[in-house]
Image 1 (cartoon, helix red, strand yellow):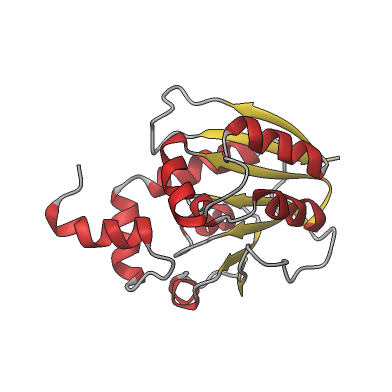
Image 2 (image 1 turned 90 degrees about the vertical axis):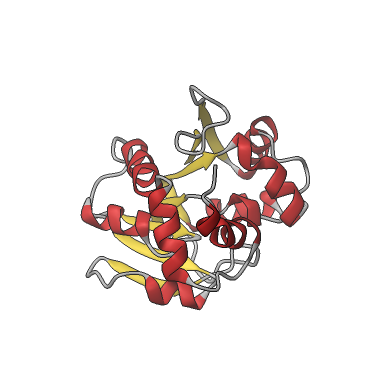
Length: 205
């Protein structure tokens, strides 16, 4: 249940493409387990990608995951389409901020990154096939995309971005394989959890 004083921030976080107040957003998502979720992403990444490797984070927001990644020794490109959010990301020697709208071709050379990550940005993906093709292109051979998939986010994803096909785990798996990835799915204990999602672990072969 969202506390009344947090309800405007909840609405803005859930339904807006431009967060009016990054500081309120940051406090809200921290209270709702964002740092623990970031740690879970890193837990799945570390056995596959060594520290000092390059990681592209999509929809970085205020940099919670980027900060955790940098703290583990990764070189992080923190990207977001919202400049206000990028400005709110803390300064760190291993975090490099860049504007990127993942619904357009990525302004990145092919075979650049060892890994790609994202947290709660799925709801803004309009064309999952094109999105996956771009990630495959910019990953180095043998690179990984660690992709949290929240079952509970699916209705909001459909409402906001009208993706085709329906972005079920089955369809996302098929699209990732068509893009050239090896894929495996780590299912959650509770499909409705907002803190422990399922994970698609995609490897560029």
